[in-house]
Length: 389
Image 1 (tube, helix red, strand yellow):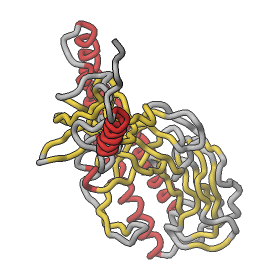
Image 2 (spheres, helix red, strand yellow):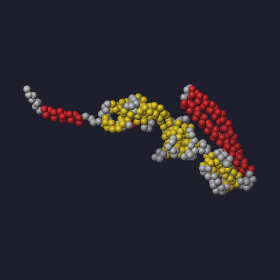
Image 3 (cartoon, helix red, strand yellow):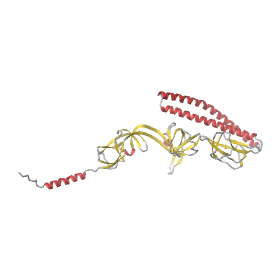
Image 4 (tube, rainbow, N blue to C red):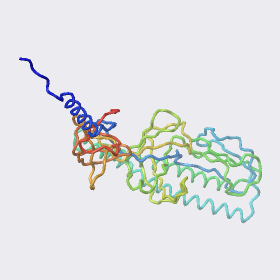
């Protein structure tokens, strides 16, 4: 028996094809997206600012009395030793007023000398106590009885007191020199060549006078600094300064080498100042003082550097870019890629930096999420991944 082909089979097939095309055309097309992977990594928050190198101690050599300064031979950059002759001068014959003035200078220098000696005597036992405490902390750290941070704080305190002790000794030397210079000017006969000698080892930073001429008492001649005693002054806005505390580690870059230097926050200045930014906005700025771990002698006074002060760090955190987060109804969400579709998922965010955020709940390391979600993306949308980071 011969089967007959159903009538209108062609029309039925054509109708089915047209319906299929219409359904396919009405289906939403895949959304093109970029995808990133949730990573488990180190995360840290920084305050980045520009700073400058500053010599801790500056010594300005000045004339103790009105005199004729002879030509100054030393130049900026010259190294000097304590006791080296910096300049020479010829004191004139002193009248009663000038002699009284020099006597007053000598008395003031004597008072400053006693103050410096008292400061030095007070610091020496404090340094010794801090040294003993640091030794105890080191032994406790080896036994696992204290945290590393406590040992570091004790070491930083000892380092700061050592620097203050060095500064007190240098201060004692300079006021001793000032008193001796004033007394020598009083006792020197007319026409005797007097000298100004360097109070400490250092380098000549500035030369205020060079030619031979008559100068009044107190005229600055030469400024001396000590390259081995430097600090870094970082200028930050007050809203960042309140987050910074002593002992925070810092990375120094932008000083003329590819390598980074390590430093630590020593002090945050208590007073702010008003500064107008490049955009004409008034800002409250605060100086943060840093101490370098190692002295770099090529860094001169007032040299420019860039500083990254570490506020906090997480050794191992689940992170993703901030650009992947979407805020909806007062909570943070991300679009997770599952089986070729986007799934809107709520997450809980922890700490954040300028680019990345810590995810406390809602995601696991290795999952893929959409970054910079397009407006057309919805929960359950088919996606076409263009790029994976």
